[in-house]
Amino acid sequence: MQTIERYKIFAYTGSVPFIDIQAYRRLIGRLMYLTNTRPDITFFVQQLSQFLAKPTIAHYTAAIRILRYIKEAPSLGLFFSSNTYAHLKAFCDSDWGTCSDSRQSMTGFSVYLGNSLISWKSKKQNTISRSSCEAEYRAMVTVTCEIQWLTYLLQDFKVPFEQPSLLYCDNDSARYIATNLVFHDRKKHVHTNQIIKEKKLVITKKNDYKLLNSSSYIRTKRRSKNSFELQNFHTTYV
Image (cartoon, helix red, strand yellow):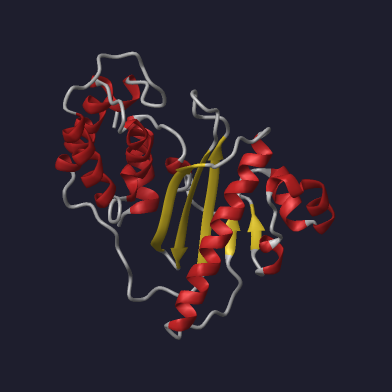
């Protein structure tokens, strides 16, 4: 994905407008469908999908670069082990004020059942956060809702749980707010919901987990080519 880094796909670049808007929309629509099985392109597709109304040549070139990347590695896919254990683990991250147009932050998360990746998302937050702590906390609330939904779904499938779900976050302030009920009344404007405390989650730092990089990081930020390839090898694919 090295070529994509050369283009400012996070904002309207002032590049020459792309004439065939319908072709751009069809291409992005197909890439969005492909993210159901290719989480490694989720962040880039999410960024390019913001410019469906007025795409530029730079945006179209970046989309073509994604196609080239997919063509170079057609065999990559998700692996679901039959020997995994029923334990939900989630990694969340945010990029504060990443959108240069609206200054909205990015939320990214990955949820694993055992060692199998089963859910992921890369999306801009609905409101503007005043600090990186707010952005991280909103990301934690989002992934907690996803964990709760997955818990109900697995219970319907008669899948037993022996341990509480794990939620990994690298922001100390956000973790303190989530685990201390005293802070909830002070952060009502962040839409706490208190679901993090009530749903019996164990919240810890990402650094405690033996992964080189958290897979949620790739959902919120651009990566260098070497770092991107190393991330996929360690956390996404088998």
